[in-house]
Image 1 (cartoon, one colour):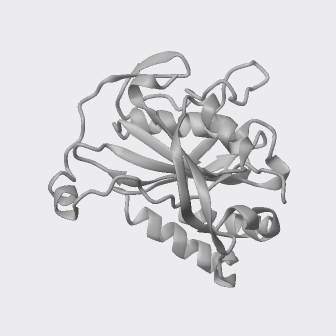
Image 2: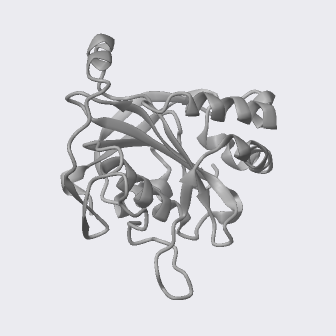
Length: 238
């Protein structure tokens, strides 16, 4: 069995099903600005909250200040992400759905990225940057639901060469801050394979709590596998 990796499925299905008509009816509802606590700091929710709210595993500069380790994904990232996926294909295979060869090409990734960017109401994709500012992985908020739910799913992956350096913990902290501040959401959920202890620790360090086990939850590496489910809500973050 491969060692656990810093990988969460980027397309985790939502736990709570909501009527499509209700989702359309509340699409334009957005909560008012409200204070949230991330990484022990209270900030007013809004578009200009600093993304330097990474949790305890944040990457630091020489001046010991937290630095931003994510940025929005763009179509210009297609070549870089495709190359990173090709290099890490075997490393990521035990933790991801089976992909066809097109997925690992620049054109395939360009289609994936453009598809995500065309759905800003339901997907918030970003890249993870290492200390040198190079792309080291991807992280996304998906399945964004408004109305009474105000929830989303979290998924990410970090390249083999950048695993174990705190990038996943810092990136999750930043993106959770975005979910609760910029997006005004109430809840972020995530699921890990039952034996993926490292990703479970990343979630726990960012305030996620285990809420249950979902048998045969996702088809990963060619078979239906159990997942442990986690969540964090805005009132408990930090």
